[in-house]
Length: 447
Image (tube, rainbow, N blue to C red):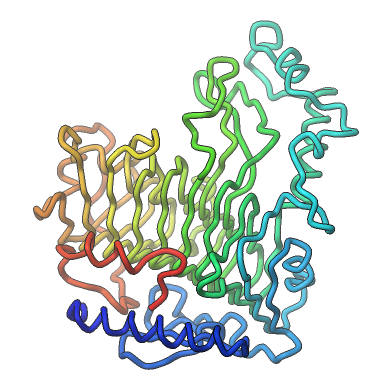
C-alpha cells in the first residue's frame, strides 16, 4: 500500500534538505536519498532493492556499488564521459556521476558539431541522395546501394563515433541532483554486458543526421534512423530509474517529408532487444516521442529471455510502443498513461503484445480525452497475451483486452503462462497514480 501523502511529502522535504547540505559541503562523496522506509541511502552506491522487478532476479543489480575511489568519476563534458566509461570490456565496478548536461555532438575540445561536420569529406548530400533513390526512377523493390548510400553510411559512422557511449558491466551512470544532469544528442549503449544502473538523467534530442530510405518498409516505404537514447542489446540485470526521455526541442511535427514519407530523425527512447534480460524500468517520464520502447527487435529475437518489469512510469505525448512487446515475460504495473495529444504527438496505442509475448498489466491508469477509444489503447498481431486486472480508464475499472478484442480481428489472448513474483512497490489501486506520479517520476525527482 502506498504511503500517505503527508509521509511522502515529509520524505521529499528531507531529501531536499540532505541533498542541499551535501552539495553545499562540496564533498562529492555521495548524495543521500530517502527510500520507502524513510532511511537514508547513498544515491551513487545504491543497488536495486530486493524483489524490485525482474532486474532483482538472481544476483540482483548493483551496478557500480563496489567502485573504489579510483573508479568514481564526476564528469560534465562528452570527453570526460568517454574517459570515465573506459573500455566496454573492463568489468571493474565504476560510478560515473554526470554533472549538468552533456552535449554528445561536440568534439574533444568542446566545439559544437553539426550534421555538416559529419558529412564533410564523405561526399554525402541530402539532395544528391534524394535524386539517386527517388522511387520514380530507382524503384521500390530494393534498398539503396551505390555511391550516395555508401556516403550516407560513412557520414552516419562519423556521427556514431561521437554520440554513442558504450557502458561497461558493473557500472552506475547517475545524474548529480540539482544540476539538470543529462545527455543531449547522445545514446547510452548497454550491449552484451551485465549489471548496469542508469538513474536521474534527462535524455533529449537524440537525433540521426542521416536517416536511411527503405522503399521496402511497409507499403509506402519509410525513413529509418539510428540511435536510441538508451539501448539495451544482449544486456542483463539493468535498472533504469528516475530518468526523463523527450525529443525536445525538435518535435516530429517539424520533420520534413520526402518521397511522401516523414523524414524521421528519431528512433527509440529506451529499447530492450537482442536477447536482453532481467530489466527493471521504473519511475521514468517518457514524453514527446513516437516509437518509445521496443522489447524484442524481431519475432525471433530470443526465447526464454526479454523478462522486463515496467512500473511507476509516466507516458505522456507518446504515439506508440509503451511498450511493444515480443516473446518475453513482461510485467507492467502502476504506470500512468496520459493519451492526450501533446506537441503534435497523437497516440496510436499504448501496449502492444505480439510474437507470443506474455504480458501482465495490472493497476495502471489511463487518462483518455473526450472522444478517445478504449479499444485503441492496445495492439497486437493475434499471437500475444495480456492478462491482469485493476486497470482504470478515467477512474473506471476497464477490461482493456475485451474492448480491444471486440473491435479487432487479431485477438489478444487473456491468459499467460507465468505469475509475477518480483513485485516490490505494487499498489493494488491505480486511482491515485496521476497525482502521485506527477511529482515522483523523471530526472531530478529522486526521493
